[in-house]
Length: 108
Image (cartoon, rainbow, N blue to C red; front, side, top):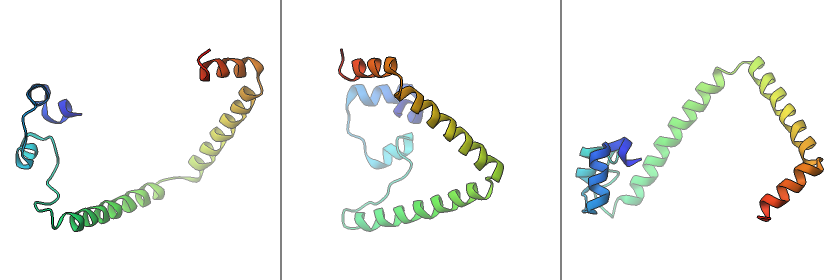
């Protein structure tokens, strides 16, 4: 959120005064991380290049996480999933639950 990025004082000033802000000013105050492109002509290429960088970083992070997952962890997640699905099936078969769900959905 803006207060977290810029601080409460700057965020309040920006939102209450509604003053235009340049890209350079936004970077300096922390409202944005970086300026992607400074010209309209290169914007599309800049977006594609940035997406490619993010994608590579994401793939590396996912692989890093996958390398640290143990078989025990996978089994435990599977057990939890089965337990949760069983509880959901019990709930859906319960008339009291279904009555409450219908009243909630249809605002009765």
